[in-house]
Amino acid sequence: MKRIALVISVVFVGVALFLVGCEKPTAELERAEKALQAARDAGAKELAPSDYTAAENKLNEGKELIDKIKYNKAKTALEESAQLAEIARQKALSAKAQPATQPPVEAKKVETPAPAPAPAPAKSGYSDYTVKKGDCLWNISKKGDIYGDAYLWPLIYDSNKDQIKDPNLIYPKQVLKIKLDATDEEKKSARKRAGAGK
Image 1 (cartoon, rainbow, N blue to C red):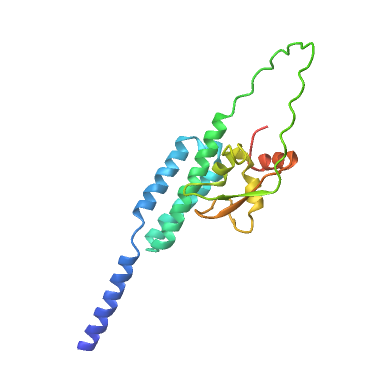
Image 2 (cartoon, helix red, strand yellow; image 1 turned 180 degrees about the vertical axis):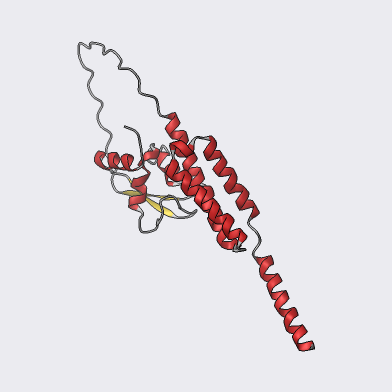
C-alpha cells in the first residue's frame, strides 16, 4: 500500500513539475490579439486579405492548442500570428499611402531639354542584412538603404529560399542576402508578385 502511494505521489509531482515548466502563453495570446486588432483597424482585412486571414488562422490555432494544454506549440503559433498581423498592417498602411490616380497635368513646352543626369553606377552582387526583432521582409525591403520599396520584398525572399521556408516568417539573427543588382524586369516582376498596384 505504501509503495502504491509512493508511486502515485511521484507521478503527481512529475506532472506538476511538467505543468509548471510549460506555462500558459497568456502574454503571447494578448500580443497576437492586439496585433490582429491593429491590422484590422488599419484596414488589412480589405487591403491585405490573405495576410490578415493567415494571421487570424494562426491566432485560432494558438487558442486551440492552449485548450489542448499544448502551451509550447501554442506560444509558437501565437508569435507567428502577431508577426503575420504586423505584415498585414504594414501592407494595409502602405496601400492607403499610395497616391490616388491624379488627372493628367498639362505639359509645359520646353525650348531646350535639360541634359539627363548621368546614371549612378550600378551596384553589383549581394550585401548582408541581419534580421532584428520585429523585422519582416516587407519592412526590410522598404528601408532606404535596402530597396526603398516595400513591394520589392520578393527579391529578398528569392535570394534566401535556402533559409526562408515561409516568406511571412523570419527570425532575429538570420543573415539574409540582399541582391544589389536587380534588373528593372526583376523589380517589376517582384512588385507584381507582392500585389503592388499599377
